[in-house]
Image: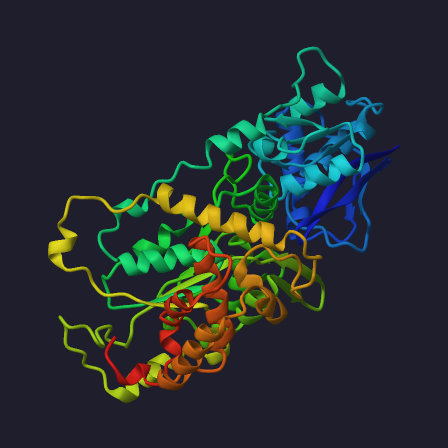
Length: 523
């Protein structure tokens, strides 16, 4: 007897239809074909125990299981459920009439219960496109899968519930419905952190506001204990809220990576990823033997924060250059090629020298000029070229730190950021997709050189100021376009249609690391 059960494989961020073919004939052998990995091959032992512990008899027959398409590598334990259902169907324990209406995935425990799997959201999206009546997933995946509308999603706790559903028994599990929009909007503004906790550091908070308003990359340079990490962690609280489309895309990435917990439907807040400096290239950009999204893709639509930037491997830092420019990462290996989205704000922090106290008026720096220069050279020019704002930060004096009066709350800063982003949305709305060379433009940081001349052209006074700054402060040539982009954002925050000299002046102040004499002076 031949039985077919529909399931899916996840490759990159997309789900691909897979058919589980189970053929039973005389004999006592078990064959599993269709390019399975070790996790799939080991499913036989789990399936036998799950079927028997659920009160059914495992068929004493020669069973051949084929996973098609045969040339697609099958990885993971999500095929346990469709294989087990196919085997029971060959023994006439399950009605064949309803099998074609459902797509199912799930890992089986030895007692017959279903364990969560990765990629339930892209599988649900694919099942809807393929026109299935329903999708059966483990109960632990129900909230993320039920986000997809126009398809019935069933969350099963064990294989017995799946059998009862397929046999159309009375009291079988019902499809789950979630008010996605209400749940999403209720969680958007619930932050544990707030900028009101930050005492002083007004110039740094201003730089963070400008960065958030224009989507600019930012680096903070200052001594240990000055609050660099504390401020960076509060950046998501002032970024514009996620749209539903952005949330769905972000949730899909985290679903494939297995980073969603059982209570999560849609990710409601922008992600904040802060990997340790010992991270490898593969962990950062994604890939591996079984391709998974890396940290830069997990930070998509959010913030990637690298603390103590010079401590990261030089080779690791250099792989950031392409995704920072293109907003996608292409991972090509001998066996596969996948593309992951990587549109994130890059925020970094670093000490000004190895000991951390170069230029600090309260501590003596023990580093020689050569060591300072060597320390700073760990960050390459091309990477620094992609960071728009360089912000110097000093430790807050005790008198200011001990003040009980809180700072400006994140909500107030966020209002100004959203207002500036709305201006940019209207400005770029009429532009054809791809005009910037990297796809649709959403914020000032993504403007091309041609768009700079159109939207951020400085007047005569501003141009003179720029020329003087580049000559006197020894600014590098690469700083020119970055200054104009940041100045355009500052003008948007001020509600100014034109970029004026005051906006240029503030933007010039955010290019400290481009100064030729930076390492020869105090911070």
